[in-house]
Image (tube, rainbow, N blue to C red; front, side, top):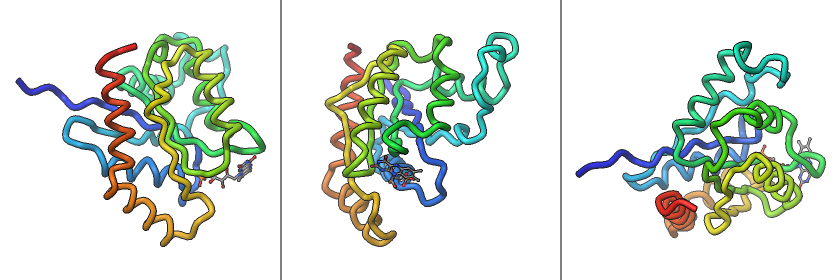
Length: 182
Ligand SMILES: Cc1cc2nc3c(=O)[nH]c(=O)nc-3n(C[C@H](O)[C@H](O)[C@H](O)COP(=O)(O)O)c2cc1C
C-alpha cells in the first residue's frame, strides 16, 4: 500500500531575500526523505493588514489561499527571526488572520531557528501559538545558528547539517509526533 507523503507547510518570518530563516527551511526541504514533503509559504509578505471587519464572507482571496494550504498541511514549520525582542510585524499579521478560523487548532508545529540568539521570539511565538491551540512539538526543535555568518559559511553549515543528519533527525521526530497524534 502506498500512502501520500506528509505535507509540511513552512512559514518564514523574514521577508529578506537572503534570509537565513528561509535558507534553513530550504535546506530542510532538501533533507526530506520520500515520506515527507515541504512547501515554503510565499504568501506572508503579500497578506493585507488583518482587520476583523474583513473576516467571514469578506475574507480577502489571498487569505483564503493561505488558510487553505494551512488546512491541507499535516504540520507547520515556523522559522522566524527576532525583531526588537519580539515577533516581526508581518509574521504576527499572518498569524492574526488565523486566530478566529478553524484551520490551526491542534495542528502540529515545530520551530526551526537559524540564530544563536532570538530566544525571546521563540518564547513569544510559543505563547501566541499555544493561545491559538497549535500543538508545539518541542522534541523536534531545530537550531542551526547561521545568522551573522557570511554566505559561504552559511552554505557550509547547511551542507554539514544535511550530511550529518541534524535536519533529518528533527524532521523525523516531527513526523513521528504527527503520526502518533498528541
Ligand atoms: C529590525 C531588526 C530588529 C532586530 N532585533 C533583534 C533582536 O531584538 N534580537 C536579536 O537577537 N536579533 C535581532 N535582529 C537580528 C535578526 O534577528 C537576525 O539578523 C536574524 O538572523 C534575521 O533573520 P533573517 O536572516 O531570516 O532575515 C534584528 C534585526 C532587524 C532587521
